[in-house]
Length: 85
Image (cartoon, rainbow, N blue to C red):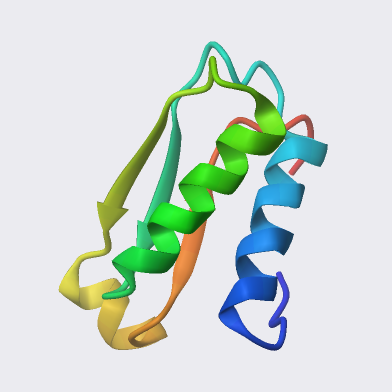
C-alpha cells in the first residue's frame, strides 16, 4: 500500500486508513499484525481507538514465521472491514 518514512508516520497513516475506509468497526474486530515490533503495534492499537472510538475492539497478533521471513522484522499491518477493496 505505502512505505512511509519512519514508524511513527506508519502508525499514523495506518490508523488514518482504518478510520477513513473502515465500515461497521464497532461490529467487527480489528487485528493489528506485527513482526517483532510489539511496541509499535500497541501504539497503532491506541491510535485506532483514539480515531475510531472506544467501542472498537482491536486485537494484536504476531505474524507467523513464513510471513515474517518474507516481510521482515518491523512490519506492521492491520486487518479490518473496509467499504472498498
